[in-house]
Amino acid sequence: MKRIAFILMFSALLPAAASAEQLGEIFDRHTPIVKAYQKVQDSVVNISGTQSYTSGGGLYDFFFSPRRQQRHTRKVELGSGVVVHSDGYIITNSHVVQGQEELHVTFYNGKEYTAEIISADIESDLAFLKIESDEDFDAIDFGTSSDLMIGETVIAVGNPLGFSSTVTEGIVSAIGRDIQVKQNFWLRGLIQTSAPINPGNSGGPLLNINGELIGINTAVSAGAQNIGFAIPIDTIANSLAKMLMPEELRRVRLGIVIGRMTTRDGLKGLNVEAVNEDTSASRQGIREGDIITEVEGKKVTSFLDFYVSIMDKEIGEDFHVKYHKSSEPADKEHHATLTLQPRPIPDGVKIAQKYFQMEVSPLDDDVAREFEFAQSYPVLIITDIAEKGVAEETGLQIGDIILQVNSHPVSSVKDFSLALEFLHEDDVVELRILRIGARGPYSYQRQYMVKMKAKIREDTKLNRKFKFEGKTI
Image (cartoon, rainbow, N blue to C red):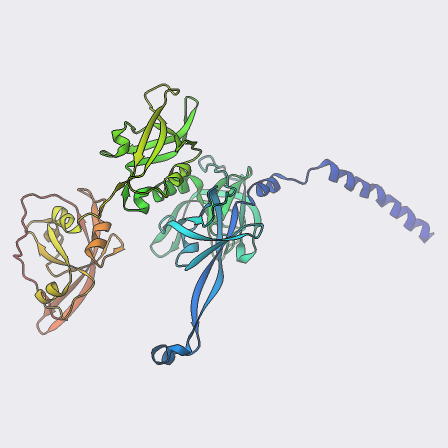
């Protein structure tokens, strides 16, 4: 009887098994998430670095027996990245690659390449890398973050904790989030997602359900689950457009600012956002609002095409663009030959005189003797201040040492010049000052910050009238 019951029960299960098999044929296991990942898997990379360290001995050996110390290198897993141009250009977070001696990127198929940093921006936490290879690579498709919906499905791809090509899903939990990464450093306007993100995901893509790039994963909330953050793709595009300008990468001048792709009367191309005077672009008639459709005979599909095509152009080397005027019918074409011009380093001494009515100088041997310093130092010192000038009104004194300009360390006139290269009248500049003074037989040192508004004052004159109250150090 028991045997009969068992046979009947087993027989009852057979239709269910058959139904499951039939369901497997009816329902496609290639879900939207699977399709999205398969679309981008060849574009996502694992980023690792090479770091050097020493072993053996201690402080005694460091100073007295350095030969006993051995120098080693080790490979460390850093994070993720994504190919955004077929010539092998990658975007990731700047904190992923910062301070690395050598970078390596590894693809899903196991292929590994070395890479170099083309541009990195700490404030936006973005870095732009180039794979050292002439191969063509699969570039990810850009989406947009302007129409994100709270609750829509998103997918994070990366290498958390070293586990390559890990895929997680979640939703858009919120948009426009501001987070404090560390003291005095915030990332703003981020996408908040519930897709699990862990160390190693940084720099990897956040995708929409269509497999389009909508953000770069950058941070996770410590001590919380399913609270991650990504930089929106529209923010990334704006930052990259600035980071990749020739003026940002080299001492050159192009004089044209390129925006994102736009469509006008059925014409697709790159919007010209600005054109500087006295440049090859302005002389050949390109104006703000025009649309560039080709560079060097190739149609442009993104602003990256424009900047990548001129990445290796030398000063004086021509390149050709096809463009359309905003004021003319879309079918009327224009051609222009553009050239990168040299951009000399500005004269920081003249900038200080013009806008702040003060004179600065490196603290070389001659200046050190004049100001009674024991020796020269790699710093910049204020050697003169005009009466009724900006510097005097701010409270600066002759002998003050400039350590920093707008968060940029300054140790030479060149540093000072580069920090103030794009200064205009009424711009506010923040300086970190070191003041060395004397009170009776004692000397003192004090660091402080000052803010000065750049002003041109023709009626002031530098005359070395003020007394330096320094002390030999």
